[in-house]
Image (cartoon, rainbow, N blue to C red; front, side, top):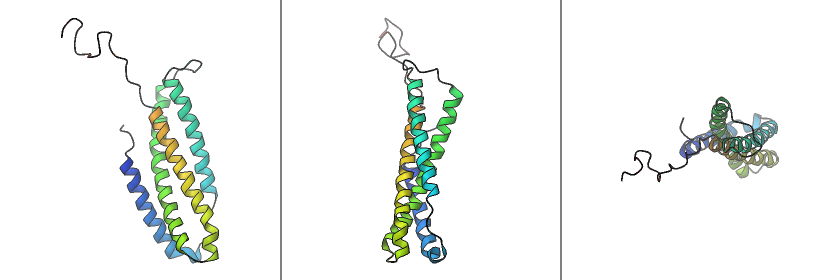
Length: 159
């Protein structure tokens, strides 16, 4: 599995921003206020993934007092991290599209929805950060250099 590509996250966010802008501009008059529940869920998930990243990193680095790492659990964490970073990018883009449209709309209802849109952007950016940290924590560390100076293909005593 390859690390998450920054360009993939940017493209997903830009596409979601366009969709958010178009949906809000088409249906805003018939919509209820923006909900806070997705923001709370994303913030909670980002906190959980940050804690998981810290614990996983300590276990992989064999820090004193930490239990051994379960390889299957680390693989699951890596999959969770990749999915969360993409979901966070999509939600960040969508929320940014909403926020951009709301910022240009001069109505009281739009002004009242701005805090929820800002919360969506902030919580999803936090999720992206925590997910990328968790993904990095799941990497297998490099092996230390060989006793003979490093090149594993070279035998001791031979140049």
